[in-house]
Length: 186
Image 1: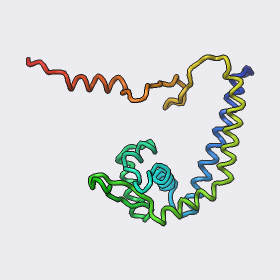
Image 2: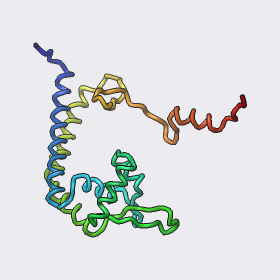
Image 3: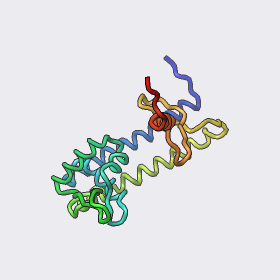
Image 4: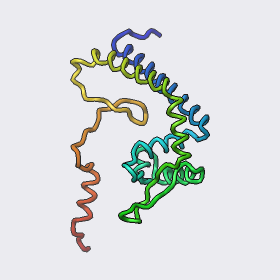
């Protein structure tokens, strides 16, 4: 079977090379996390907690779930295990004790620092690969006039759904309208 050579195939090769660089970074990150004595998921949790935390506040479990793109119950279990390992702790908000935030412990910060330092070279390589991909794809994208594309669960690209800031998806708007509408009695 012969594959026709065209711009599309060259673009696929570039994207595949970048994907390989990303996967190499992920594997190196997993090894660095284990070297620091934490699991890769605990590393991602610590990275999210420290990266998202407002000064002195921490991050809520629901914020962490959103940031890590996992279910809230999964985030709760991950936080529970990290608390048991001494990597993070839960603290109540000063203004309202009902709000609980996750903050890193000194042990968690030390583990995160170890991982980040071990990844310096890999991070630079990934940034270089991203910049190379951007430079190579930019000329091939000019003049196409197509909308940006986002991956789906199946891995097939589809047009991005852009929403205005502050608007809710249609299905949520319809559900809210149904709740507000008076019900007719039968």
